[in-house]
Structure formats: structure tokens, C-alpha cells
Image (cartoon, rainbow, N blue to C red; front, top):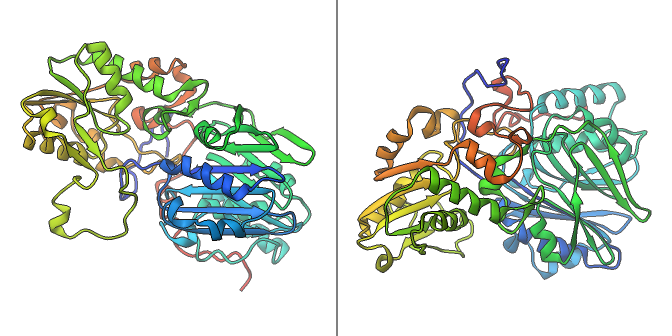
Length: 496
């Protein structure tokens, strides 16, 4: 249940990982262009939002072909697979799982047959009334019999699969008509890019929790999670998809429908960590905001030191800002392996004890004997920072002062980021002083929520800040319906 102030009052279900990226969605409507290749490059630009699986669906006006696989975009696709995905419309997706296991069956785009053709859909976000939607779909199935698009989904266990089935389940409606009916029922965070055989669609939840933008090609249109992907494919930014808006793009141009009244609550953590620094959110460049956060962090938590070094890459802009405001020189004291990708090989205990060395390694000649300010974007469990501090001390750092460009994360996210559970979040049970001792730092400072918001140049009320203050702008269901794996029990939507 939710208390009157909007805070969660029950204990939360266990999870496995702490802060993981959201998903990335991309769509193209461009007759005469190689839409699959455009989508491939768009997904490449959105790889940071999901590294578990990738997929592309393309339509030539008669059929939709989907290719998806586990792994990074560069691992999933090659010239041969892209050559198969012909047509004038494409939808792409990079996934980090927030509902359902990380398995091929849950990779996106999802696919359905409909009364009028076919449907493919990609989703960034997380729904909070999935069980209610599943019950609605089951009732429709019982009432109308076997419906177009309600193929067996026992192998899939995601909110996206249920949403796709709902949009495809109306035998007397087009996909666009179904979306106008069903989207007002959907609660939670959703930035959707989907298509039928002839039309590209985009839709965003009334709160606009996750970003979604529209771009213009010389001979077509693009929709994307972030503006950085527009830049990659040579599309010019037109505008954001508005919260509560359904956009349709076909040979007749653009059609916009408002399916719900907007109540903007964009994710504040997008500015801290999720979005690429070269993207623009709500008219503000992410890099500029992160640099300003660093400046404000320096004013709130000054310290005497010799160097400011970032934890690459997400800590770099804030470290630059901290150095600017403090007058302490900036340096690259930690090197990140940019080519590590995602591995499915489980480490042995010996390798595991090496900690994060596979990704990060210190520059000993830079940091030896120096008093360091180490800037990172967040602390969740504390394991990463503990390993970094130990690594820097072993490399000869005289002092290690940790500065974090976000407030303490004390509440989980149910809108598309897979944080640890509340019991696993280190800041729920420890004060900053206790966390400092736990990670063996000489000092620790978090930017305040007030100064973080000020750095964005936007109003506090325009953000979802739930992971920092526990106020969830979209009401949540009971705890047993919130778990990442709550849909893992197979549910058959067909009559047996």
C-alpha cells in the first residue's frame, strides 16, 4: 500500500542487481532508405541503455520480419541479417531487463499478428498495472474466443508482451484504434515505438518518465529514446514526444493524438547517469547539467586535495565541474577498458577477487602520493566504491575523498531502472559517515537533492525523484505484483 504522502510503506521484493540502465528504443519511417541499417546505427548510439539483448523489426508493407538475439548490437547483427530486414519501416530495441528474465524469449521487439496485419513493438520503461492488464486480456479472450494476435506467450514473461497482446487483440480495430483504447488503461513508465505493416507509432506515458524524441530525415522520420541517436543517423531534432501523446507516421504524414492529460514527471536519474552526455533532455544538454552538478557538489563538500579524478565515464563531467569550482587540477587517474562489452563467462573465485580490474585500472604515476577527490555518479550497494578506494590506496594514493554527484539512493525504482532492493541499498541502513567508513574513504560527500535539481534548471515538481525521496508519482500496486519476476509463472492466453 502507499501512504498518503505517496511513500512506499511495505518492504520490497528481492532483486539481484543495482543500478542498471533502462532500455533504448528507435524507429524509422523512410521509404527508399535502408531502414534496418539506420536502426542498427541508432541502436548503436543507444547501447548504453541496454546490453542484454538487441532486436530489429522491419516492414515492407506486406509482412514484418523480426531478428533479435542476446548480446550487444554489434554481436547480434551483421551485413547478412540486416540485408534480410528490408522495407520502409523499422523498429529497434536494446534491452536491460526490468520485468522478466534476461532470456531470448523476452528480447524485443515483440511481435503479434492482428486482425488487419502485423504488429512489432519496443518498450522503454516499466508498467505497474501489468497484472491488471493481464487479467483484462484473459477476460477479452474468454469473451471473444481465440483472438488475432493472442498467440501463446508461455515462454515470455514481460509487461511488454502483455501490452503487445492487448494492442493486437481487437478483431474489429486497427492498431492505431486499439492504441487509443488501450493506452489510457496502461499505468507506469512507457516510451513505446511500434509499427504495423504501413505505419510507425510512438507513444509516451502521461508522466513522460522516460525520454522519447522525434527527428526528421531528408526522406523520412525517426523516433528515438535520446537525441544522440538522431545525430548518429543524420536526423535533425524536431521535438520531444509529449507525455500522453500517441504519434502516427505514414505516407500521409504525422498524426498526433492525446490519449491522456500530461502530468510531467521526467526521471531525474536520467540527468545523473542514464542518458548519454551528448543528449538533450527537456532542452538541457546532459553534459552541461552534469558539469554544473559537479560545481555545486564542490561548493557543498569542499576538501583540500591535489587532484580531482573521475570514475569513468559517467563521473567525468561532474569531476570537471568539481575541478572548475574548487580550483583543484583535474586528471585522468583511472583508465576504463572501453572494449570489454558484455561477457557471459562466469568468473572463478580467484578472478572474482580481482574485483573491478577488468573494467577499471589506476594510473599509478598520476595518483601516487596524491590527495585525491574521486567523483562518481552514485552509490547503491557500495561495493564498487569500496573496490575503487582499495585500488587507489594500493596504487599509492595518500588520501581518497569520495564525492557523489547524486543524493543517496534510498528507494528502488519501479519505472524502468533495476536498482537493488531497499534492503540492499547501503544508504537505507547507513548514514553518510557510516558509508564513508564502510568504503574506507577519508571523506564522503553527496550532492543534495535541492542542488541537483537546481543544476538542471528545471522545477523540482517536474521530476520523478522517487529513488532519492521515496515519493512515487505513479501509484504502485501491492508488493507481490512489483517483483521483476512476478510474471515468470507461465500464463497461456489461448484456450487449451
